[in-house]
Length: 170
Image 1 (spheres, helix red, strand yellow):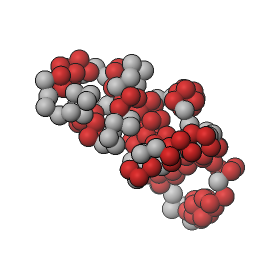
Image 2 (cartoon, rainbow, N blue to C red; image 1 turned 60 degrees about the vertical axis):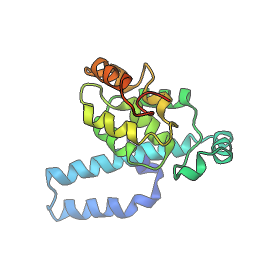
Image 3 (cartoon, one colour; image 1 turned 120 degrees about the vertical axis):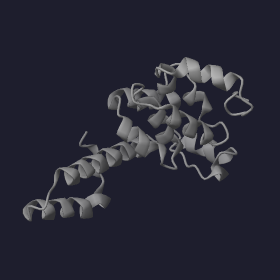
Image 4 (cartoon, rainbow, N blue to C red; image 1 turned 30 degrees about the vertical axis):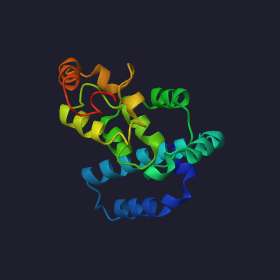
């Protein structure tokens, strides 16, 4: 993407470190992988910040969602879907975005995760972390990753007879 490198001045220390490592020939494949993953995550978070919607932020703060510990850039689902389409499938990035405390980043994580790589364990963990259902509409929507996973029918059958109110969609 290259988005954050030009805009996020707060990462100058990281770029300096990379330059230093390159000059000292201490760079390993793992280091460059870490660097690339950090830049991509930073790019996406900068992209979300740049697309923030004050009206959506105000609605988020006025609702009961604010105290849950999650924050929001106020970006609507339609706009997040457009951003997800630009980013494309990226399981590693999805995992990083899911760990964020930004609602918009978590929605994006659900939209860009590769259905071929999602595991049942990941789906079970995510359903337990839906923050009181705030993310349930995206988690279970037809265009989200889970709906395209190869094991979705088996999982749905199990959840339909579950006593868990989140799995039942209550």
